[in-house]
Length: 189
Image (cartoon, rainbow, N blue to C red):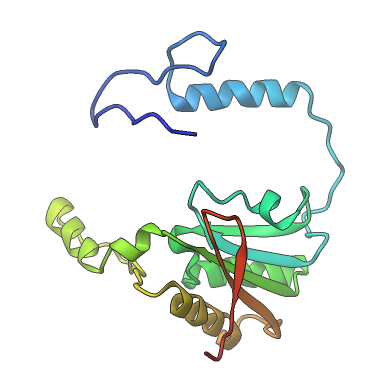
């Protein structure tokens, strides 16, 4: 499946609508309309905010990762925390802390993937942003060259965080975007 290229920056051109629908409107308009269709048949499943499997998954935001399908998860099974690279940052620790302390999760799964965009960036990205907007971002890019080593670093950040009471069941994986398989990373290699 291919994705059409977005219109050039600053373009007023609207994205075409999905097949069988009238053209026009923004992507957000299309998504809001899809939500209206979804809500028309929605029935409250009566779930609690606590994940059934008591697991939190930290993964990359890459659009190729369908985590629920890849892991055989259903709605309500887990907490999903996504960011660029799936890196365990201070904000990921914040979310994991709330997940564990307030909502009962006990296990943490970390998922990076092959072909990640962070492998092509450096911290120079922050300097380029500073040159462009006149202010350096307060966050690190967290770029990496070795995905396995970055998974190990993220596992270590979880295992050493004083804010997380449940650090014994932390496992890290690399998702292959071409095969759909997870490859587990040994934290001690």
